[in-house]
Image 1 (cartoon, rainbow, N blue to C red):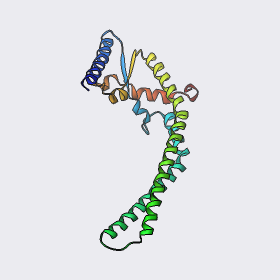
Image 2: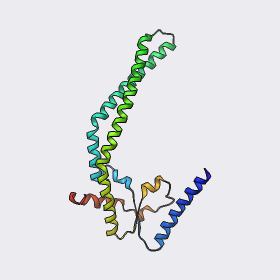
Image 3: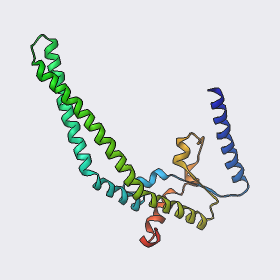
Image 4: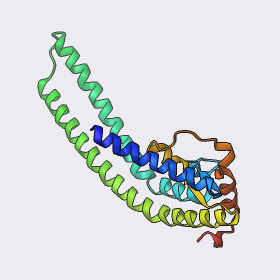
Length: 192
């Protein structure tokens, strides 16, 4: 465990020193927060449009899953009430109780199956719709960086997730808002 921490610390420090060294040689570094691409009113419109399509395509499935979950919750509540009555000495119909337990188990299995199936379908469709947009965004980040003489663009969101961000004066280097404005202003034919 200590070796893993030591190696991880070494990799992080190596990255920090490499970026620091790069900046000292005159290279212009900027950061971009790809998480902001998904913001409702401030993000990348084309990306949001693809997710809106996904939401519409999977609305029926999501509604079915929600209805099934609500039915299961209602049945669980009913079963708990029956159990409480039983624990207080009130007789209950054991056959009815057993059939409701079986029905709840069946509902849970059905929910799990449909949920897994929906997730797999959603992931597949998300990949079809979003991957081309993300590839285009990556190309446009490169074009934007070249036009602004930026030598290196770091993804703030990914750096923060892996703990590689020790300190950052974000206002000095952040191109996120400017890039989103630039990308959203591109004609639709330029976004392919």
